[in-house]
Amino acid sequence: MKNNSRMPTAPNRNFKHLVGVTLEIFEIGNDEHHQQGGDFCCKGRVTQRFRLLEIVSSRRPWMSGRVIILPEIVLEDPLRGAYPSSLLKLRRDSNRVLCELQAASCTAWPRFVYRQYEVKRIVSAVKQYFLKLVTDKNNASCAKVPDDPVQLSYWILINFPMSDSIRVEMLSLNNALQRLQRLIEYFKNYEQSIRCIGCFQQIGNMKDVFFMSASGPQGTYVNPSGYIHETITLYTADQIRVDSVLSTEYSWFPGYAWSVATCARCHCHVGWRFTAVQKSLVPKLFYGITKRAITLPGGAAPSGNVPAEDNLTDLLPHRLVML
Image (tube, rainbow, N blue to C red):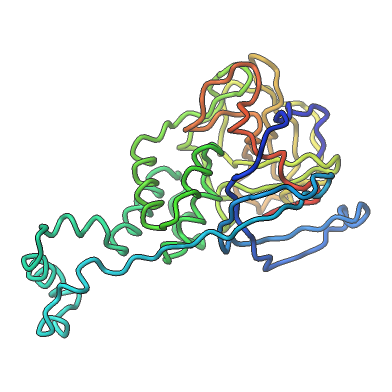
């Protein structure tokens, strides 16, 4: 897909101590269009976090540096040491509440204090809040949402639309339960509107975000010109103008033709509208909004340019196609 306008890049900054993640590449595939330029498509999953200590080389399209792997602290059941041996055999789902009340009575704190650190309860709560914010709940429930608290925190931070500043803040936490608790707080106060970065005009709503793939509602793609776009898929969008020209060339979604979409107020490029060219495809029409062109919850209102702390996309290598 082509885009003649390039969003403003982040200014040179000191990226020392920046937090990032390592990826395990589990699928690599070639596309006939990308083969001509030597590119390939790949999918990956987050395995661990790191902190950047030093940039060794920043020559494009690659950047290398010295990093330290951050520890992942896993907390055990907070009441594990308080259970009398006589209750261990009775601690099942049917007797769980009674056993926890009995164990908590042997400590200095009531049961509700320990419930704040129950892994299963927190994981369940995060998933419930997540489903409330996603329109296509049937598709979301079928997605590969992890049950492991560490992988769940990674999955949501990578796939759910949010500002880079919020994502980096949560990735800086060394405990998965703490990240999940922070996500619950974040979901409770989530602002539904998606606004243009140029004029702050509302162009979309979180209730219209849906899963185009099992990976999640957000994907990372690159067009033939080498520009990387973190793209969010929406059923509908408001206050945008769509070019009348349709093209299936280099389409990120096979079977769909794309057309350029711009903000109706400031005419900034905000993404694309995808129209099905095959009758069997559903949905027949949807929008792909590039994260470079919008403000997301957790980011400040724009002042003409993308805030430096909220636009880390330029750190991605140009050869990255999809993760």
